[in-house]
Length: 449
Image 1 (cartoon, helix red, strand yellow):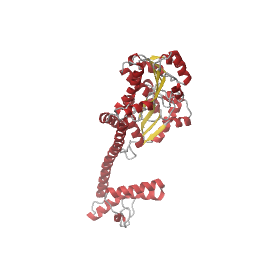
Image 2: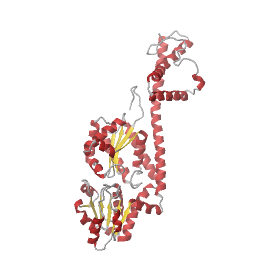
Image 3: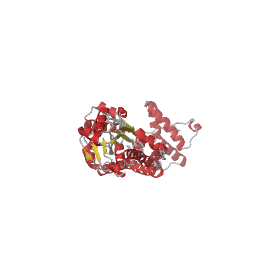
Image 4: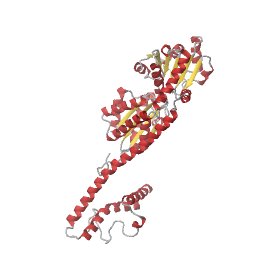
């Protein structure tokens, strides 16, 4: 991004999206963008004059990561696209999505890639999803220098977090706790009939751990229109959601990961399944946010319900301190945000100094050419007048006509100037602000009349 003078300014970033923390499952389902549809969605963003964008679309979140000159306007444009895709009114969309800008947007992208925003902190799938989303945007020519800089820092940080902390082991520990519970009740995980309801990333994490333990008997169902395709990708059998009573009666262990905002398994449904199982118990791992299984199920003999909080507590009671690792990872993220912002400032500052040096040199040559016979004192006085004319005029105009924000900028400029040139308060006393000590007038271009 460049300013009117032609040299680079710090990029501005924005994130707008819907996650399991902010939006209901029905909204996320309508907004979901699969791999095949991502190119078309990126093209639609390009039509709105957005030139740098990444679309991260998972079971638990759909986010648009942007780099642009006016992030607030860009977010409004994205929300218009979201409203069109979901069929929701604009005000309804605003209630479902979250927004992050500048430094907060950078921090959010870092935290997502490091799995600090996942339902199970430390889960490994999200980094691969972020990399895939970046690659697809690059293929669609929607990655410019600004997003590339952000994502290279993101990938570097995620690797550092994985290498220097054991945060990933925490996710495995939570999922392993579920497998161990099922093993204690039903024996060999390979022989457990597993039912997965919903498409949440946490459910996928538990399914992966069951698979590693040898399980092959898995059925996937759910209210989402994407369930059948998801079942094929996960190599699970698919059953329609209206066949849930039959599927539940046949399952030894159930993983729910919908977060639809309503109970997918209520007390009556669970009671009916238990009757058909004739005393065989069933375990329900409720990974929904909000919960998918009615807590009243706990009153039924033979039903054992575990929430994500239960699994996390079991993980904490084990040998691995997942909370401590997550805290360390968050500290690393905050440090990288600061260093990233400093690197951007340095990249902006160096070209600015180069341009300023060239400007000074141009002014020096102009003074020499226009006043070839001037002695050293006159030539240097003219040079100082020329150099300070434009800054002095701008600061006077801002002070006289600007609003409160402009006055704050003026104060900031004065403080920066003092630091740049090691000025003391007494250096400001007396004299004319533009260096024109002899009262000569000047034209707007800084030349002496």
